[in-house]
Length: 167
Image (cartoon, rainbow, N blue to C red):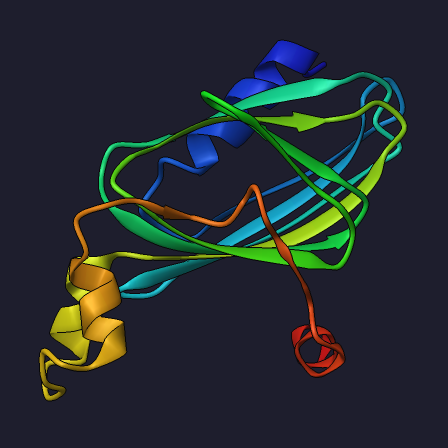
């Protein structure tokens, strides 16, 4: 039987992988987890559902390369911890440009959480969009040298985006 530590380790490693993968797990002693990562050339889409968790989980999420991350908290609450603690309530989203990614992500006991995370490699995104000029705001955002983090001030997901995410 999979232990809590094994589950945390498996999920944490999933975030480091650069390939399609999934974890589908259901155990009445721990709860239900459904995570799917779909990788394309320059982005990765991760959908995740946690339900009926019998214990708190702490996931070490680490990447040592730059990324742009769009995070959508669709159901439940999320807590990210690094130097600061960031909480995201249901139907909030954030946009972040990070040069490395080192968070503890907490899943609370008895929670029902669902989120969508889209991660972009800025260099590969620019390579994909090679025909736009350097004065384009997207190019400037990808090339900026300072981190851009909105986890501390997430915004409400608009009804149109929310519907689109479920279509």
